[in-house]
Length: 467
Image (cartoon, rainbow, N blue to C red; front, side, top):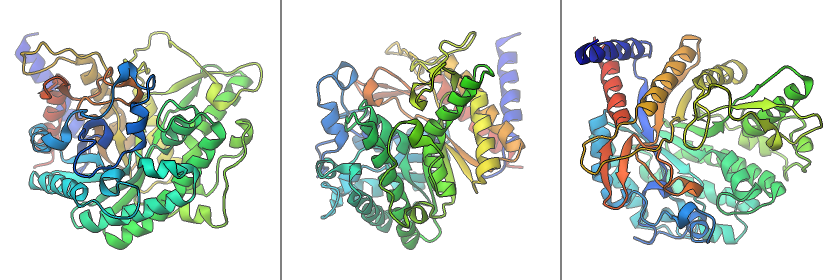
């Protein structure tokens, strides 16, 4: 087959896949403030827990930090131009709480709001819908010093912050996400300490998680009061658990892993309670639940954001095991892995979306993060970076979403993680998730082959729906 034949076959495949999505489906990409913005000590921004954590020796791979990151704060116009070149219809970004309120509450930093105001206007001028995430793990350090998410007051401070941002941006931002991945903020940050603020206390993780949920519930009506027509939701991370065999202990531990990884935050939001036996199985006490908390947490939302990268395949032990200690089969025979290393298993995304639709009757679903880290290399001269494995990853996961749509799941959009290579938390700059390569020494951006594929697919989508 000739090169032209290959291109034609690829175009036909893209067209067929694009045609399986409904009109007005949103195709976008996502980032997070601390991972890309840099400018951590500029224009009145206060310190966050990630500034302190990154400055602590031994916490981040190679001692990296987000002080400069991808310098998005200064290169925002260039980055939005790249989004336009890619044909993105939406951009999911997070707002740094400490840029708006340097100490988490009190006096507003006008320069911080100005930055996001300019970002939103620049996006809208290019026809790109802004989706704002209010919390992507970067708690103001001053609030942490007062107890952080271990204190109930932090939830009320978050609601105040949400209202302030909505007052400024609400006339132009139609999509609002209160929290990104509260499981990670609670368990990785407070339970095992591999993320900021670095606390190693599993009981503290349970307390922090409850207060983050409470913060979400308190913020929802405050957002609606400011932006009555807004779409408001929350984003959860999911790692679907599959049994490796049918032994009773494997089925038991798979259910426990599912409760721990997937239901801990989902059940309170949609069913008003924590999973039965979750805390008992973890040998921990329930969080400090007050009367009316679940009524607050269950504030009606318009959508659920779904972050998915992989699955877990569980082999049960012969004795009772805590859900986070269940044995994950690795490596899975014949499986492919990303650099994280996470198994590539697109079926998990399809199964997850259908489960959320069938069991929880979520009104709308957005895949708010989905992507892969690979060891991308740029030769310093070319105008692209070849990343065929990421292209295959995106094709397979977009196809999985199409299958879920065909079976009735109300999926409204897809956001690739990530737009740019960036600071990957505890991994520093050692993992590249972007569809745009960032040369950190020069801050040059180079659209990867996967970015060109995504752009081509979005073009095919619009062509299919333009008739």
